[in-house]
Image 1 (cartoon, rainbow, N blue to C red):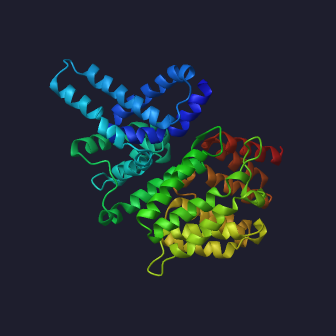
Image 2 (cartoon, rainbow, N blue to C red):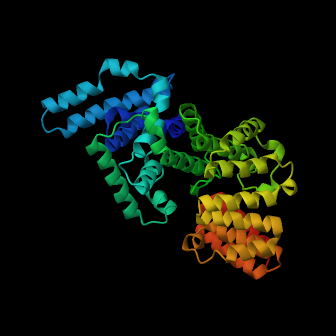
Image 3 (cartoon, rainbow, N blue to C red):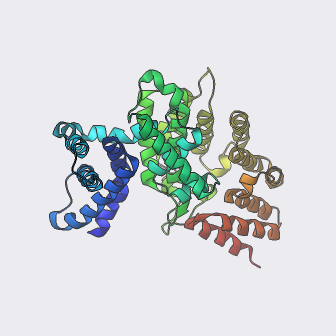
Length: 409
């Protein structure tokens, strides 16, 4: 039973937390209430059975645990505590908490975390922590920043939301565009943590990827702008490959080795249908270009059929819009696929002065692949070893160890 409860908790805890934050108006109190609700489930569910709606049960239990917390924190059972607890046990409010409103809470929380009064870095850090559930150390690693710096950034953001009384709601349609860039960025961060987790034993976290797609669909219904459709298409097309990305042992299978008959056709069709709508004649955005690249991969019947020349062109257009180190690396890899390993290696070596790429394991893994193709075995070995030191994801570590072993001594 404990395993069952833990699986339900793993699947539901971020949505439950989002609802508790809305109900309680306090991030820290909501996290304590979530923990207390989970502990209560571990005690009660083995005797009472799994409730029909576990998420609603956890929300209700968390709410009443929070009431207990408020009362314990109050030195006296004073009027303030009474008012707070009465508000939390308002039966009308409880009745209004339908499943539909609970489903909307993660999107409300994202818009709250992306309020314009917060700095962009604070928005992203807070969302990764509260919506994606990453530990502060993991958020720090994502930003290549020290953990205390990220911790302070998150605390200040929470304090500002509380002190400024920023509402937990999706803003009016007229206010959506000014928050759109940040909201799209955090939904994509959530998806990426599901598609390629920063650490752990599993190659993917489908729960996070599927939640990001669900939020992307909700956002597309609210605001069907080209970049929203582009992001949704990008996530659908990437997620379509998930069944082919790992073998029965959970080991990584590279794109060129994947059985494409395992790709999810319905997601490919849906994603490809969105791409033309995302490529707006009034201006093409970064997500639309990435979706177009993903569509070219999806439409190629085999790896050798991939239109690498067009992908290089799309990456060049993407780099002009969004000149990030990772896009520069992807463009270099595509160049190597299109023009040969020597061209790819030269392009990557030209990027090696970038400190962010020096600490990015995929830089060294890609460099190792090109070195191996060129017969530079010792260079390939050193690059694989460097990549191995930089990834905390176990399936990637196993893959790199196999690559090293294949080089022999």
